[in-house]
Each structure stands twice: as structure tokens, then as C-alpha cells.
Length: 297
Image (tube, rainbow, N blue to C red; front, side):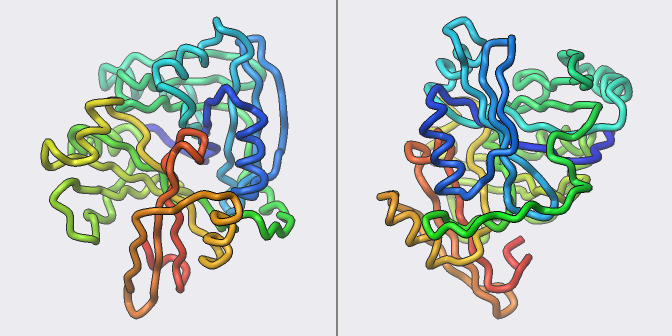
């Protein structure tokens, strides 16, 4: 098992830097932490995200038609989640662990980081994993930054989980347990469905949860997703502070939430809904409000 010390960030790729910065700062309420240009052919923006665990966000934008990001965006049919990044104490140990499972990683070094990449088609179930030895970009030892109040933002409290659509959630769960020590903590969905099953995993650092979603019939929306896009990121879930504020922010931006669901757990209410990828930089976004912190999962 690869030791993970910090879940550092989720990365989005897009061709529209201005639009996504507006989305991330004004609607999500993130703060720009750093900006840079890479000789590898892209611009980058790092964001602070609300949450005491200091899980951050990143935006990558290609600067030419030959950039690897241009290829990704064409294959992905537009913007979307590009990779996830986790800090590790030893790149060499990670390489050994991967090779022992007959997984050949991609390895790079530079700017104080030793990067080990788990390819989407070689163990990543459609998602690129960046494992890095070196200083965290979003330092978990620093206190959560102070975020300005913004009545136009949805009022994100923290990132809750990233969900992957996969063909066989049981096999991916077994692989992620061997690789990263992920552990299943809940199977669902809670709302009865004849279309799909979910498997929520707890990560080593518990800074973020993971969800695996599989289809159980050929007519389900997950099956259609897999047929059109293959395995990969399906949605990202944020906990919000105030449901009315979140809905007001959506209305002000002319965003129409859908798939509303309300229920109670141990006499405490929670509400959830989704926001369409066309409004969310190619990502399906789930918003959740919980009456009591931590009840939802």
C-alpha cells in the first residue's frame, strides 16, 4: 500500500481561463493562491478552498494547440476534471508498490517534486492520479485561510467527495485498497434505484471521501455515461453552509439545479441537488446541506 500523507488538490482542465476563474472565485468562493506558466504548454491557477483539511483546487489551461491539455480536452469533448494529486513520503516506495502490482507508472522530476503518475488506463479507472514527493502545494499544516463573505457564492464549507463511474466497482475498490488503503464505509444509494449502485470509500487521510458508481442495467444513465465517455470522474460533491444562500446564488447566476432530494438521518435533515456540467466547467457538481455536521456520510 502506498502511504498518503495529504490529499492536495483536484485539477480541472479548460480552454476558457477567464470563465472558469469567475466560476471558481465568484460562484464557488475559492481564493486564488498562485498563478504560473509552464514550459509544458499551459497556464495554471491554484485555489484555496474552504475546509480545515486544506484540500485545494487547480485550473489548467493550454497555451497552444500542441499542449497535452489540448489533446485531453478534445478526447474529453470539453473541460472537466483532469487529475487528482496526493502527497506521498517516498516516490521510490510508491514506484515499487505499483510495479509489484504490475502497474507501470509515469515518472517525472522537477521543481522540488518527484512525481509518480498512475495512468487512467493503467490502474486509474479513467482518472489520472498524481502522487508527489515534496512540499505540498496546499499545506495542511497551515490554518484555513479567511474567506471573504460573498452573497453571490454558494457558500462552500468543504469538498466532500469525488465520484468515479466505473464498470465494476468491486474490482476498483479492491485495487484502490491495495494501492491507497481506501476502505468501503457505505454502500448505496440511500434512495432506492434500479439503475446504479454506489460504494463510498474512506481515504487514508480522511480529508476527502471517494465514491465508485456502477450501472446495474443497460438503460441506466451510468451505463450511458460509460458508453459515451468510458470510466472516469462522474461528479464532485461540496458541502454548503446555508441551503437558501446556495439556491439564491444559483438563481442569481441563472443556474437551474436538478435532482433535488431531501431526507433525515438520526432526526437530522439533509438536502442535496446537482448542477449541470455545462455551467460547471464540464463537471457535474453535487451540493449537499446537512443540518448536523457529518451526518450525510
